[in-house]
Image 1 (spheres, rainbow, N blue to C red):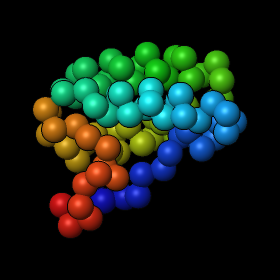
Image 2: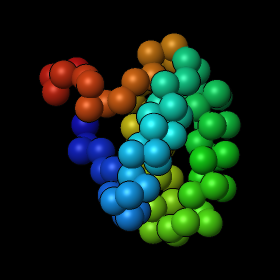
Image 3: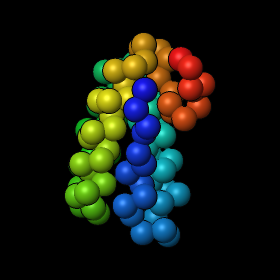
Image 4: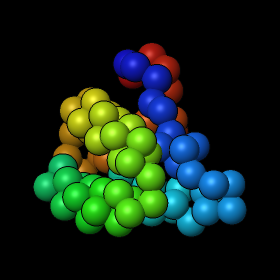
Length: 83
């Protein structure tokens, strides 16, 4: 599995915690369809702040969620390396 980058790292430090919660909410959705819809909403909001973060979010989203079954979407950093 490839290492997941954090799009929040492209944002000012004072904004990172709030954006981190928003990104985690995307990965916390129970199905791919719900996660995709949440991703599109977040992407639209993030585009107004930092385009590089949006690019990273897009790359990370598809690359990460293809490894997880619907109903088991979690932050891949919470997964053991051997899965």
